[in-house]
Image (cartoon, rainbow, N blue to C red; front, side, top):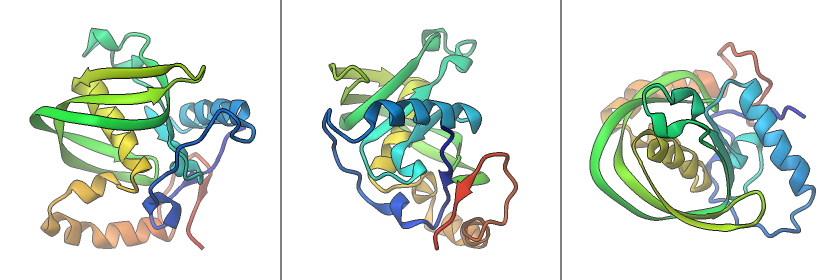
Length: 184
């Protein structure tokens, strides 16, 4: 089932998400719904808070970027109970966008390398290091689990300049092909 995307201004996007266990209600279905919703919305990643659930889960499919970074071939992963344990390396800037903040992109500085612990869809534990684009996308989705949005990384001046655009987005003043949910 394609789930509606939660849009900027909704309180679930600002909550710190909770770990879950294997007995989380309808987990298998929710995992399938996450993949389906991400692909339908043309996303590279999707975090559970973006579909209204404050749990520590996100999905990524970076395989479409394999031409730029060959190591991303078949890079399709589910992260459950994810926790970044280390960030290091040079910070670098890249334009980021978000399904929850449609039609808005901003340059964001992020560290080159991260270490992350998580469980996959089979409840196998992983402790892995990622660099480059994969690390950036993981950090972006991970931020959703911490109640952080990519616009939070902007300078105070840039945030002031974005305020009217963000207010318009929170009121549904944008055009996308996917279903969405606004704050009430």
